[in-house]
Image (cartoon, rainbow, N blue to C red; front, side, top):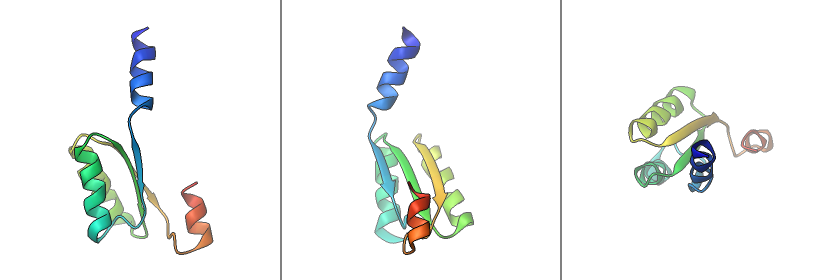
Length: 81
């Protein structure tokens, strides 16, 4: 029963997908979601910077993930699907 309760509470956490999160206000938004306890998925074109942001989000206690994608292109946007 405890395992089910844990899964249900995890499913009820908000999830934020922040595209282009490696710079500017989008990165700040990702950090704000992380500080608020949400699950955060960030995307961007640069692998090293994306992994660094993913690590920072995790250090804040967020369940986070980085997806390398260029959402200016159709195939990049599809990577986020």
